[in-house]
Image (tube, rainbow over all chains, first blue to last red; front, side, top):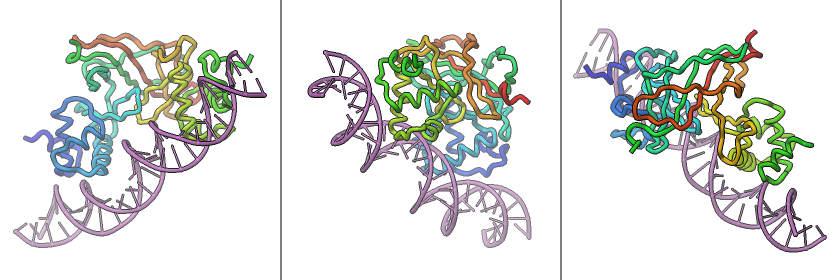
Length: 138
Length: 138
DNA sequence: AACCCATTTGCAATATCGTTGCAACTTTTA
DNA sequence: TAAAAGTTGCAACGATATTGCAAATGGGTT
């Protein structure tokens, strides 16, 4: 079966050309994407507003998640299966390459637990590592 | 002596009303501030542009640093003494309270080292913890 | 296949956010 | 206190994001 459509149906979203297109970029691309990446690269022409709304919907339905960044950019990446309807479990490390500027989700590496000062109650943690990625190390 | 002016002089910046005002907000406020917080709360009226430029200058001179966030907001907080001229050492954990929405720098807690996949070379790491802070825990 | 209803899209207008160039004004230094 | 350097405010601009509404599309039903 078509994975792309499956994901949309599982999220109880209508399967439209635009959504398929955008979701495909995440599935095939692998990495993190910004609004601009999507707007520029869709094969079908999709209105800016629709891109905004699609991304928003995808986040709400647990298809993609926001990636924390140290600058002011907004990045999204695919969620793993265990995210659903606004409840994200994206507590893995995000790696930003300072050479190719791509962001990778290091799914296999979970954010380490840390000891907070007395009285602080942690609920969720995120971690960003900047450096040189696999492909740029030469 | 006046701490505020000292900080500015140490950073080789002219001491102006606007800068004193903005820096004072950081020193007295303690927490993290966004551009909008500053623009709205200065006692003297300061132009939007000047606020932008002042924050930028403060970051360059190592007076404040950018805080990574999981949404799209840009937050700044005071650096500790050992930051200077664009070389920041702000690798401590940032805590965002989901109740009062304030961001605290947990200076005493450094970001733990983690094992990255083969080929990834880390250069800088940041960590954000969301939860309930000391003051909101009741 | 043709229909209806709910959902989704595109357009236009508007709001928010951040940057740049330049002239006027302050601060510093001598 | 005057000149030089640094800083500010204004105006204009560009990029980014949001909203309302009418038209179009998708999903389910007959």
